[in-house]
Each structure stands twice: as C-alpha cells, then as structure tokens.
Length: 126
Image (cartoon, rainbow, N blue to C red; front, side, top):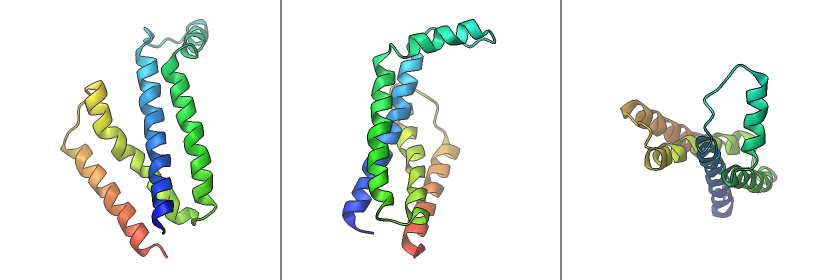
C-alpha cells in the first residue's frame, strides 16, 4: 500500500472519529434525557439540526465518505476496511480529554489489539 493511500485512509478515519466527537458534543448541548413519547423525540430532532456541532459532524462524515471512495477505488476492501477500526482508537483519548470519559486498562488493551490486527492484515493481507 502506498504512502498516499495510507495518508488518505488516516484522513478518512480521522474525519470519521471527528464526526462522532462532533455528534456527541452536539447532543450533550441538549437537555434531552430520553423519553418513550414520540412528541419528545420529534422535539429532540427539531432542536438537533439547529446545533452547529451536528452540522460539523455531518460535514465530517461527508468529507470522509468522499475520501473513502477514493481509497476503495485503489485498494482491496479486505485491506482497507480493517482501518475503519482506527476510529475506536482515535475516539478513546479524545473522549477522555474532551468529555472526561473513563478510560481503563481494558479499553487501552482492546485498542492495542485492534492496532495489532490492523498491522497483521496490512502486513500479511496480500
């Protein structure tokens, strides 16, 4: 895999991780705590699309999608797709730093295993 393709994959995955962070930031700005009533849910969605963070997330996912299509045109899906797991690894420290979410050894170990899997597939995938 060429360095250019690898950089495009990393950019697409970074945009995907950013999407999740933007969406979380957006929904956290609402005072919605869930409800079984449909009227509350429709109100939630009406408010949701007025939040800039949600639009940043939508822009991130669309940008990442176009980059991902370029990658898929040049790389086997069985090689490229495991890189999608990088989002887990990128979101973990970001959610800790931005949202002060709890990160323990199991999450770090799991992220390390994901990296090992990506490395093995990239190394021996062809």
